[in-house]
Figure 1 (cartoon, helix red, strand yellow):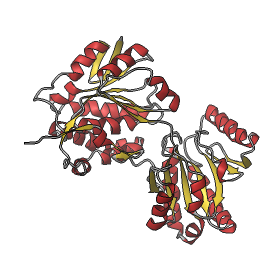
Figure 2 (tube, rainbow, N blue to C red; figure 1 turned 180 degrees about the vertical axis):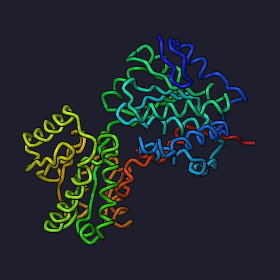
Figure 3 (spheres, rainbow, N blue to C red; figure 1 turned 90 degrees about the horizontal axis):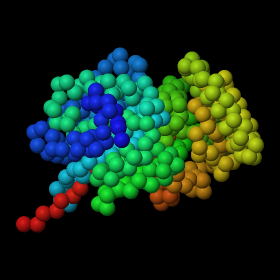
Figure 4 (cartoon, one colour; figure 1 turned 180 degrees about the horizontal axis):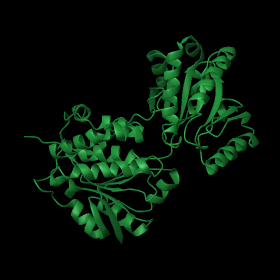
Length: 408
């Protein structure tokens, strides 16, 4: 049972038993604590490198990650972790299994767990892309000037699919964090945890956008342009594969206004994505198979392709909302009269609703009407991929810690 250590690097052929022993051992300088300064210093060094111009230009999504890891943001997150009910303590050893299709998720998950004082083992997929490799390089670079406790307690590893390795790490951990498809989650649950350990699961989710048609038509041109730019970032950064990326657009309002607003939105969107990197032939085929499949199932009235970068699907109605990934740049469209009509559509799998043209009162009314059946996030267009310490309705720092109560 052999793994390859990517952080710290240079440990090819490390046995999983040795990995567990090393990762669980007390680090130099003593045990980690919640908000440990040794970890905070490392996160700050990584953040400075992530927001460098050359990094942000090559991977725009890493600038958002750098902002999230800034000392001020980290301090705010810790301030919101109330110790009123007891002393906050680390959980212990945390095993993270992030997805391969959203490169930076592993950093958010790992960073918050490390900030909570945990020792961590992160399995980085062999299929991880360029952004993940860029982050890994930055972390290794920052390690040189960091307290040795970081290298001693934090591990990022790679290994080919191996039930033996996954089972050994699952038995050793105090918390297992899984980000991935439903099938991957069910497969992982075959590997039991220690009796005291817990699973934290982030399974398949689906997201959509809601736009008030009248508000869109009344907005200045520059406001619409900014919204379209934000929509492109929401959808295209991870080829629309992120759980928070919109896969459908609900146009809210009378039919004539919705038709005019959608036409304006689509023209601006098609113009914005026309110069993006070409979509490879396999992806273009995937999009057509998915789109025509909806039509064959009687769920689509019309399909329009704007080159390979953008595909529009006119749904037969709100109930036809597709929740599976259909290829980068594929959006289903439908109209509803009011936000309240979403009550009949939304279910537990729906995670994020990006929105334009609605007030706080409208959004609160929808949340209360849904009563927890779906939609963990309602955020403005352009903020779908902005990571928050609360994700899928879970406060991560709380989950990464334990409460110790003391009575004198």
